[in-house]
Length: 124
Image 1: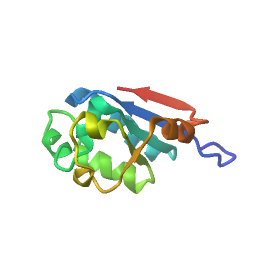
Image 2: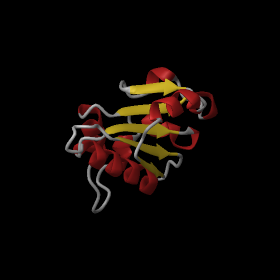
Image 3: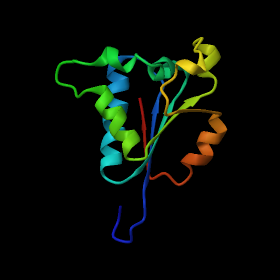
């Protein structure tokens, strides 16, 4: 936030399912949320399975990296949003009921409207 109490918006996009990309996205999202930014985490089809229950747990105990569940929960607690591109559902054969509770499934165009005015963008 700045001195006028304006809330900044940060967009973090993730399109890769490798541990490095996922962890980088979560670290930056949690850091932005901790500084008071409104955070939009957008997962494209390439990273869609990351948001299925049980997948983040597979990334626990990576050497030198924080707990991905802690990062995810921190973002949610600080009013960050996790948005999955709707194309990821059929593309990766995901049952929407298997997604983490907080995940919103949206069209890319909806996400772009929500992202309008963002001051920071990160893509992994």
